[in-house]
Image 1 (cartoon, rainbow, N blue to C red):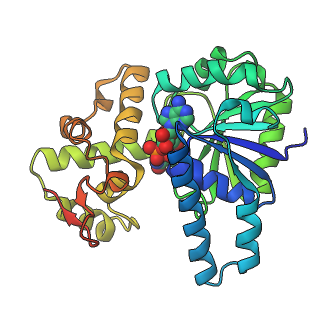
Image 2 (tube, rainbow, N blue to C red):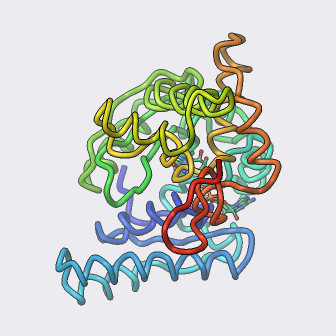
Length: 291
Ligand SMILES: NC(=O)c1ccc[n+]([C@@H]2O[C@H](COP(=O)([O-])OP(=O)(O)OC[C@H]3O[C@@H](n4cnc5c(N)ncnc54)[C@H](O)[C@@H]3O)[C@@H](O)[C@H]2O)c1
């Protein structure tokens, strides 16, 4: 199936990254969020990221202009009516995603495919809310999308072969590599990565080490490019908590219980980089540990 127009719901960290790589692969993009202000903030992020690529001589200024000209704001779901593929990249909350799919489906053309970028939620369950579960698939990009090579593809039980093949072609067109995961909570990458991050937060909670000690230990002791708490801030602590909750509920295994300290940070609205505070305080420019 030919894919040329992409709709993206959610203009946050992931939605903007996905929009950018699609436009840089010459695909038309319609970008939606809850308000015009959110969409405009997303467009400004993309423009800034492309400027950085020009400054680093990774792309020509003309390529930046071409990419930006391919992205248009979509104020509502009606504006996604001509899309061949709509990728949902809204907040990691099943209720929010359910409402989006219920509202979205009547606006789409019959042949359109729907994908979700969820980090953890059942693809089969999300597909069942739509009018086209056979045309629904998980396309899970990694953060930051322009830099990360991997995309996980997750079929729901009902996803048909044409949808799966189209998703593979789409990911290859973006220059990314896919792996295929079965539809179990948090799939492959987050099933392994997020419990490690949650354990790092328990290590902090129990006073085994400070933020700085834990991150330095894992950077220099395990050769991780980022410490686990730094990575948690980068992902977004609300997303980390949601994924742990999905693992805990979905696997019914106490080893996945979210650390109470993680819950506290989310309750405080300290969600990491996107709100300027999390395990580090980013407001002064250089990150200062908050514990
Ligand atoms: N952050 C990561 O590292 C990461 C990696 C892979 C996948 N994901 C997944 O991608 C999705 C988005 O995560 P993010 O990090 O971009 O979050 P984010 O908080 O940066 O952005 C979420 C965006 O969704 C918007 N939104 C919320 N409700 C909406 C609605 N009803 N309609 C339209 N837009 C709506 C919000 O306004 C916000 O702009 C989640 O499902 C998350 O699990 C995140």
